[in-house]
Length: 601
Figure 1 (tube, helix red, strand yellow):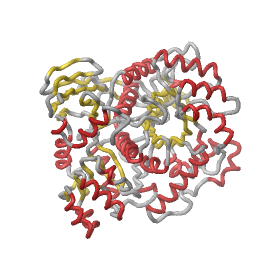
Figure 2 (cartoon, rainbow, N blue to C red):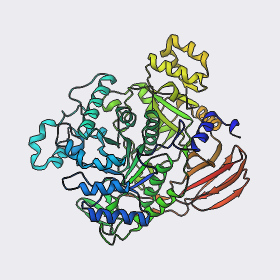
Figure 3 (cartoon, rainbow, N blue to C red):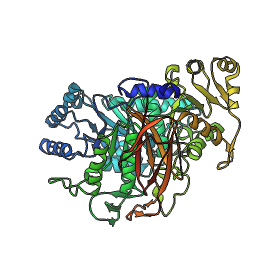
Figure 4 (tube, helix red, strand yellow):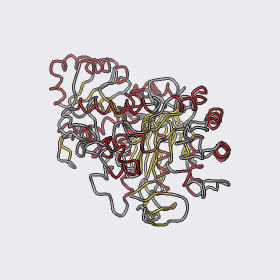
């Protein structure tokens, strides 16, 4: 049966026989053999660390720390223990991790303390978190700097950036200037954090650059007040594949000043706290699961040491959130998620500097029509309703924008023109979007991808930009110049029409999925195909009140295999189907289901 499927499915099927080989794979953290689900926060002394590790193993609560203990004087025994347990641990240096020229500069003393982890090959790295947001928003923000430095603020005031320049020392005029400045910042911070960092971007879409510039892991922060969850996943997964780096997801409990913690709901001057504050448990579960299924190497429930336990100390009694985390991690360990199927790569220019939060390339440049085209593609066509930064959130359910139904599925990666021809050729379809400079290396890469059978979709604007290179490219393979289409929701020319995109997805996916308001994704595992189905409806949550469930918000979805299916099985509510022509499922409010389809080969 595989010989009748599009080329990407054959490649992924072969890769799934061994996830450490093949062009598309789940890239795990270096030195780790399994997916990592972490506890956020740890005690500092060895007896308590040992107690917590043993408890997490016994209860199946997780298998790593993010963040873990810091490499402080006297912590050598802690890291010797973590190394012996092969327990990955992220290092955290507070808000100063983002500041150039500040006190977060580490060297031989910290390196010596971490030596047991390095010798044992156990993953560890300093977090460089929210650096895109710091660079553009926090670097001139005096209030934030005073919070970081306290009484010493005046000694570090000179490190602040001028207001109105989005973190730059002077106003850049080109994307190349922006790229060079941001790269200099990132590389400098990386060097001062032992040359070993995990990048964690939240509001920005700079995942590809973190991969290119040498991060150990391409990390995302989601939830919090951050929009664009699903496009950020597409950026991170594409960057992971382009630069051969693992990627991770950190799920934040902050929500408009409220934060999930243990205990009853309570309100104070700092905002709401308690298990019913912040985001809903339903959203946390959906994000944990979706991050895992989307190919992340690590998922971190932020603040979890203060959420999963009634008190962060013995006897470590689990809360409802802690019990849900145990259930979720057990589920993850018990199922082969396979490899995400993403037949379409959205290709942006290497210097595009896409930044949905700022709505300006690199946080500062005026957007061109091509930049608007990219924005409209992600926010209006692929992941509609995901922007609560520039559009007003639903006042009755502001959480509804964090995960959205996907009319075409979550089957896209975002890559850029720095990708090699061999890499680009792994995608059946390349969709060029935005302003692209067709330099020699990129034209060469396109040529290689076309020769290997990849279809390249472009606009008439791209054809004109290619000039004399277009005709030679068109002779090498399938080059399609798309018909112009104005997107009704934006009133602007779109990168591709909804009709043409739908035709491509129907051709490239092994299943047909129909149903109202359904989020779906497709993976390939060793036995066949796995479909993730999510109903994000029916759970309404505001920051300072319990979630409200609408029991009527059930969604019905139909899955029709486009191959001979021997057997189908649902994972979360086990049910089997023999030789099904179609499977009809009902999804409860805020629920996730996985459907495995086994084929006859």
